[in-house]
Every structure is written in structure tokens, then in C-alpha cells.
Image 1 (cartoon, rainbow, N blue to C red):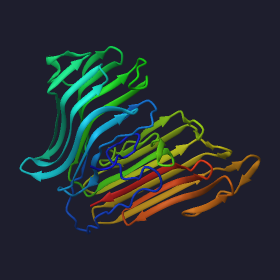
Image 2 (cartoon, helix red, strand yellow; image 1 turned 120 degrees about the horizontal axis):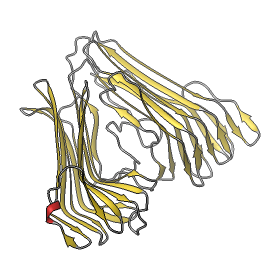
Image 3 (spheres, rainbow, N blue to C red; image 1 turned 90 degrees about the vertical axis):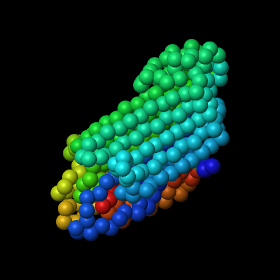
Image 4 (cartoon, rainbow, N blue to C red; image 1 turned 120 degrees about the vertical axis):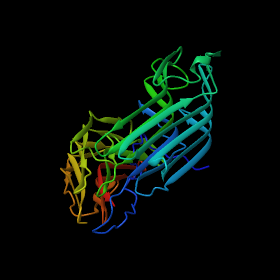
Length: 408
């Protein structure tokens, strides 16, 4: 059994740490005449919040991200997966693995639970969900499905839901509604990703199990495979994360990631802002991603933008960051990052914004500020425009994260 991983929301990449600079990524060096590569990514988890604000992220996580290793795999298990201090799923196992065999090149992700319960409102027995994405003979395809051994709603057995049709919606008195066997796939010019979820719980009435307005995914899986290309692009961006002690108070806002690029289109993800009671107020946030994979060149760019932030007595002006990476057919590689912070103020006093990589400003009794926090490798770069360590709150706030890299 492995410990829980506290993210607010997982996407296909997940190469960055929950807070702070992205984890070190080992990228293959390749050569000028390197053969085209496939990209593999997958994850599965027990429970996780999809909408609403609750101090909980996906747990019982098995994942690997943006790799060219066809033997990549991960597995996890946990006796109980909780949401809002409620034992929602029991005896949970998750696994995800890549393959390159007679079936083709692909990824399969699985998740199972002996029981999924919401008090006496809902009881799902023997739940299993799985999804697979495959590239074979020049074609992309996917499969996904969920089955149950038994289904009870308000104590009544419902045999017709043991093998539910895709995206089947059911009303649950006292909770709201659920969607069983949520499945789908998205095909692009660069590859395909598929997803499957055993059940999504939508709490739209007041109840003692899940806060009203919160959506919870139980047994969620994702599988992704790219077509062969010069290099696989990777990266992510988000506006902010906030951690108090060991508790994630706010996950990655306006999060975006990729292992395939965007077919050269700029995709924007924005929110009006967030309030973290007694900790921070973050203004309007948006992130962008743009990337492509091809026979001649692969490239990717991420950006992050925040209107402003208030943490206690500390006020921060507009924050921005960007990261990009590219590789050409002849083996040339480039990476670049940048970040900026408009202003720093405490009360009526204005502080000079430090420049240069990993520059530090210490404001006694208030916070330590790290500007332009960068991790660079030969084919990967990650930047946090600003990291605030608040002394009195034992809090870390990461702002303006962008990362980009190429593999192959």
C-alpha cells in the first residue's frame, strides 16, 4: 500500500510536484538520426473531486506520464478511499501499463473496488472500470467499460445497472444523481486518449456524505498513446497551488497539460479567481498551451497569467510565466522560460522585485519570496514565477507555473 497523493485534479501529464518546482524529469538524450518515438501516458485512481471545493484530491493513484518506455507501469492499492471523511470506496486497486506487442502500441488503465457506498443511498458491489488506447497499423482506437457485481439504490437491488450502457444517468434521492460507466475518447492528429469512470457522484442536495455542489469521480482511468513522431512534447501550466503544513488547501488552478500537443492551436483555460479562507485571495487566472508533433519538428509552449494575489498583508501585482521546448528532425533541441512579477507591497511599503533565476526576497516577519524558480535540463524546463513561504501560516503558495519539454 502506498500513501495518498494529494492533488486537486489530475491530468494526463502530472510531471510537476504538488507544490514547488516540478520534479526532475529524466529525458532520453536521443541522437540526430533517432527513430520516431511513441508516447505513453496513463493513470487510474480510486476517488477524486471533479467539481466543488473540498480538501481532498485523487487517492490510490497509479500513473506514469509522457514516457517513450513501452514497459512503463504502476500499481497501487488501499483498504479505504475517503471523501469528506466518508469511506466511499473499499478495497481499491489501481494499475496502468504500457505495451508494445501483437495488439499494437498502447496503454491500459484499470481500477477496481470491492464496494462503493454512500451511506444507505447507494451501494455498488464489485466495481471494475478499464480503458485502453491503441495505435496499430496506422490506426488509432480505444475501448472503455465499467461493470458491477451488484447495484443497490436506497437498499433496492437494480439488476439492470450491473452492466450499464455508457454515460447512464440515475437519480439518487437524498444525494442528487450519478452517472455510471462514463466513457469517451478524443482523437487528434498526434494520437488519442480515452477515459472511463465507474461512477460520478453529483451531490446537488444537502446531505451528510458529500458537500452540496461537489462532484466526485470514483474509479477513474485514462490511457493515452501518440503516433510515432520526431519527438513527443510534454508540459503543464497552472495559476496557483496552496499548501498549509501537509494539507493541500487549493490544487492546481486553471491546470493544463499535454503529451500530444494541440495540433498547433492555442487552448486557453481561465477562472475568475479563488478565495482560500484565512490564507490567500488569488485574482483572475488563465493558462494557455500550444504544441504540435510532426515528422520534421515537434514543439510546445505553455503560459500562465494571474491578475494579482493577496496573502495576509502581502499584495502581489500581475504574475506571468512561459515555457517552451522544440526538437527538429536533424536532432536540434531548444528550451526557453521566462517569468515576471509586476509589484510587491506590504502595507504602504513597496519592495523591489528581484530578478534572475531563483532570486530571493526575505521580508522579516512576513514571508520569503522566491522569484523565477527554474529547473532546467537539456530537453526540459520548468518555471514558477513566484513562490511565497508565509512564516506565520506555515504556508507555501506557488504562483505562475509553466513547464515544457521534448522526449525522443
